[in-house]
Amino acid sequence: MATSSGGKSSEQALSVYRELRARGSRPFSQLTDVLGLTETQAAECWAELESLGLITGTGADTSTGPQAEAHATAVDPEVALLRILARETQEARERQERTELTFAAVEELTRRYLRGGGAVPSEVEVEVLTGRSRIQQTLEGISDTVHTEIASMHPGALPTGDFLTAGLDRDRRLIEGGARVRAIYQQRFLSVPALAEYFHRQIELGVEVRLAAVVPLNMILSDRRLALLPIDPEDVDAGAILARGSALVRSYTALYDYCWHTSAVLGRTEDYQHGADRLTDQQQAAIRMLAAGMKDEKIARSLGISLRTLSRLLSEVMQELGASSRFEAGVRATKLGWLD
Image 1 (cartoon, rainbow, N blue to C red):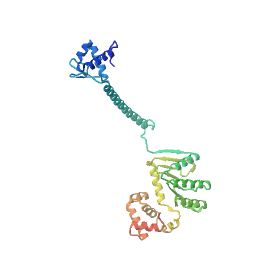
Image 2: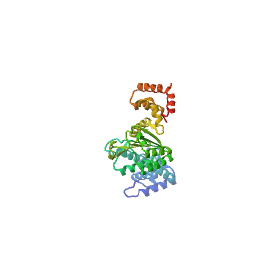
Image 3: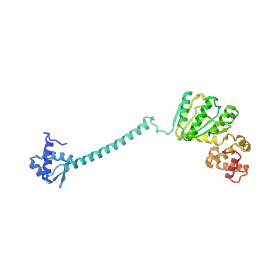
Image 4: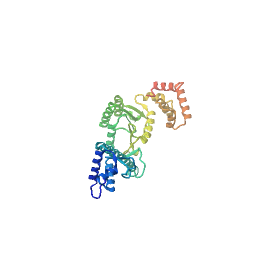
């Protein structure tokens, strides 16, 4: 508040306000003359009362202080208080908004240029895992956080005994929780009695099991957002990579889906081979991907051929099956046990 050098402006301002309340609206100069105030004291009282919202001036420009012809009007204290609170609340809100904008800008700059060493952040995170205990811990964490699907493929033989028992328990929990569980194994391990029994017990639980002549590498995918794969497929002791983020995991998912569509369903392997021995590997893969609903462009891209070559390849499959359409070819391939 404005105060005079003698510190009496508040008392003088109160006297002005009381006089104004008693006499009503009147020229401010008359009011201050009655109270015997100097021009400086009058200006200080005006500024103080106006800052508190207890006085308004009309009839002249009062933006720089009282004018001789200005009429002063007293404002009820409750009204003045409410107006001050409203003004302070609005100013506080505006300060809060400015603070939030500044904080957000600083946080963004920090995230982009300090934490990442100046690089723009990526939606992909890659963690290198070393040591069997760390990898096992990660595997257990993946199993505990699956929501919709876990898919795996294994080029080598699985350990027997407690490992397989624990695997079946894990599959049971996942399926009971509503998750889809898929697995691809090398076909040659079907000749190992313990593994063959394990595969069939998985199927009884609801696991989708397929066999392939060639499985490129160990891989586990979780909800299409996590991927666990080896650092070196040729060296199991080299460690593993845990990839997070759909931008990278999509590529691993595409590889897995290709292996899935080109593998055989366990239980139909002999029927599949019986009919498939008349088809090339490309033809077998194409008919399976077509039946899975993949578009021609994606099938051709997966097989590394042109759309024209794919069209010719599918025509040959239709001729082999004696089908007049792709739909009929899919139906007949299904009846022969080539597809799910």
